[in-house]
Length: 356
Image (cartoon, rainbow, N blue to C red; front, top):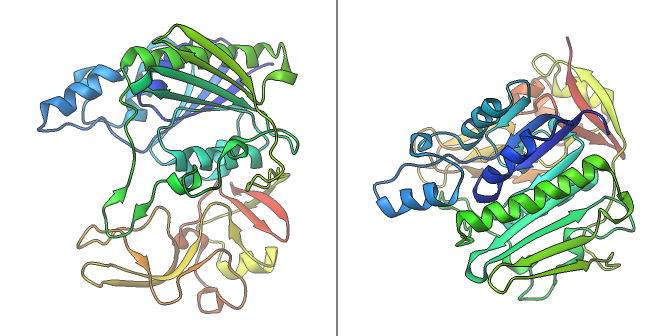
């Protein structure tokens, strides 16, 4: 299939074991790593042991960004590999930077997996979803190939009060952060899921059977030495719309192009995956920031370090002449728009490319 670009979301238990396998696949020429976290040091020795014991790291990696650590390990295996480390949540990365050949999701958050499912479909890019459940010694790999008639992650979700939508993690704007759940999995189980995923990546590289790549789930029960392969199907009542974007370039300078310039060129301005706020307020000290800006990620108060919340008017999912009338002279960069963002207006989607 030629030179491949793989985006790996998550560099924890599964991801840290998967990456060395990907570095050894010659057809993969570029790997983008996306993970917001660091290998945290802690006064709790048990917590340190947990990180070192379950992930492909050494003690010298503690306190460092996960993506930087793994980028160095990839280069030690293969110096010529193009590695792009992005220390961010997958939903906060400009989506134009995620255009690739294949996504692999090594995520322990339902919400992050939902975001990756949406991004992969919009960008018309296959993805591999990996998961482990330590309490039952289960390892799972599911493949998806975007198509209107193909199953997506949400096709199997139960919309009921006890279903997956009800269990999506909540983020508290008071600074508490997001609720997440540990897989309670060993390094061996993460490495098993990583190996299964690497074999699926190799299959994709060979493109031996493109028809059956999507909508298949392989579950390995290492406790009872059993394996199960199941097929998933498109749910006509799926909440996700399964739309794929046709992308066009939009060349401008985010540092000099104003909101007014953008509205005159596009009519309205929506940055996919992001929203605008006309002012933010700190829930702790009450400090306000009345400028128009994107909440990417949620801004933190310089005094309290709490996540700031929208003030007065809340969020706008797009800008037009009416709601942005007071901010037409602001540059795109001052509001948080970045090169690589996908901007849309009236059904057209454009990748913002920085002017030379």
